[in-house]
Amino acid sequence: MPKYSEAFLKASKEHVIVNQYVSKLKAVLESEDGIRLRQAVATLEADLTDHFNLEERILFPTALLCLPSLEMADRILGLTREHGVFESDVQAILHVVRSPETDRAIPPELKTRVQDFIDRLDAHARIEMDDLFPKMDRDKRSLAVIRDLLTET
Ligand SMILES: [Fe+2]
Ligand SMILES: [Fe+2]
Image (tube, rainbow, N blue to C red; front, top):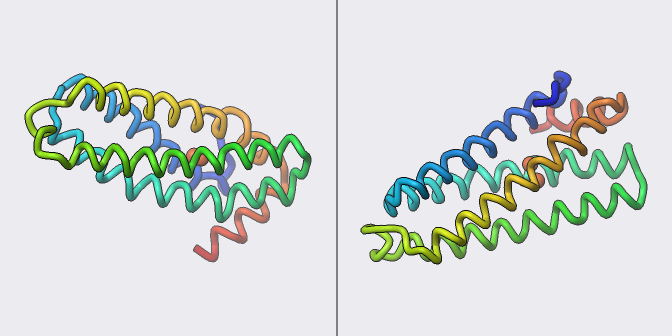
């Protein structure tokens, strides 16, 4: 895992949460326990919303302000659009996991859907952790802006 400076501690911690959810959901799928899946997706919903808010309110605007380029604009646009898709995915998955049939077992189509969601979320987090955030971490101005904005939260 890349090393983050002090200003990125919060974002880094947030990504530990995303990584934990990816592992947790994989384990729940293997257990075939529909009730555990329902609980895991319900807690994921709240934590993921907080995580996306932190990125969209603080980290992404800072990247656009301090490291402006069309490439960066495309990257941030892509990541933001993916957040919207993930939020819709979670709502659709919640709708299915809340049905009584899921109490007994996880239907194969739901399993495929959750696995696909996990894979895309993992790939999204890797782009942020391996490329975007280390670039910002090397930029003094980005760190100063993030530090200021984090003190307002
Ligand atoms: Fe993100
Ligand atoms: Fe993220």
